[in-house]
Image (cartoon, rainbow, N blue to C red; front, side):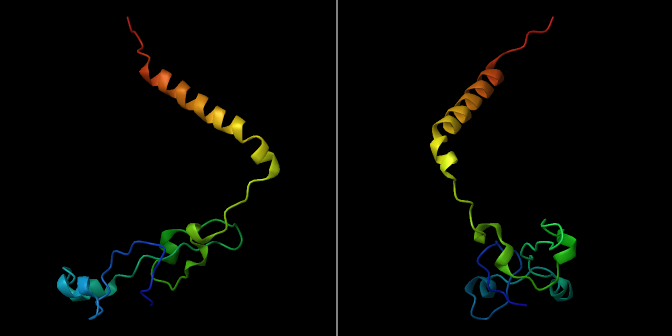
Length: 110
């Protein structure tokens, strides 16, 4: 299984002799337990539903980074979004102010 990753933080040590970190501090687990561990899988999209598969379904399988959320194209704002940007910012501001006022209001109980 490949150990070249750019999308996720990996917990399992690679045991590559050229890796300074893994050479300095090897695994603390017994070798037989460590050998059973797999690297964390990349997200995999279910072709039928368009949703991500559960961790249990992809753990231990070969995955690719093509479905990583950070690698997917971001939706471009439409002209309508650009025209109404001021309204969206104002609505977010009002929502924040309202929630701050609600959280600072003390409720008196008798």
